[in-house]
Length: 292
Image (cartoon, rainbow, N blue to C red; front, side, top):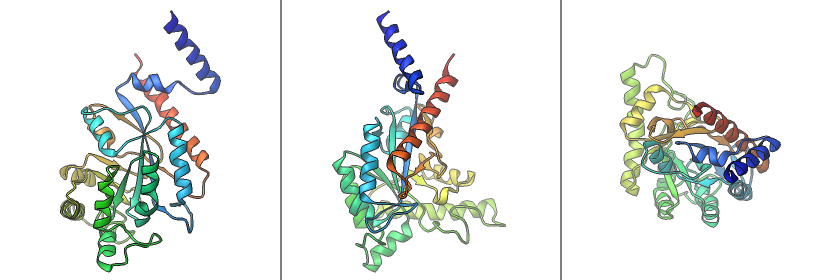
């Protein structure tokens, strides 16, 4: 009777506040609603749609942490989807695209300070240029070299993701998009050559096997998925906005993970409210669909 009364009180509070009780609903099911935040550059000198200041990044980390989110890595989410691991309530993935040097210069110390972790999705050609040119330590424009990547990995809180070796372009193809007149075989081979080039380079330079992939500009195709699965990738990120229901024992549920772009021009609390809205909506839908 006491347990029933407690549940009733929580339910009434939830109704009064305008949202469902997420904790018990999620913990009692075989799924998690995964929230992923998308960052690119971290700079003091300027902010924009894809650039945040170190202060804003820290504010985001603190705000989401205080709201009950728990930082996880993509490999943990993929393991959960395979049925081989567990995830905390409200799992949160911090993602940084393109492999900017400022991710190591500004972001890494903040992650360490607040007990957070992240995935950095690397563009191979950009890293190769910074490594070969020697112009590799300017936060405003440099990209992570192989040595930088090894340093990040040694922190124990960074995962590396594949963002293609040299397909982060608008032309001749849009990201991993298909060229006009390209046969299935030609398209498959082009993708395999590029994806595997970065995969093997990171293995050689860092002794690390990547299993996470971020689609440039969010463009994805069925053949790209086939190539990635052939190469052993278990989780992919899109630029589609929202959150993702990941089900234990369903490996495919963590392909095409949605993300929320953390616009550097926006207020951190507003972006948190947006994420919370996506989370509560997805949780309500998932809970109601799994009810008898």
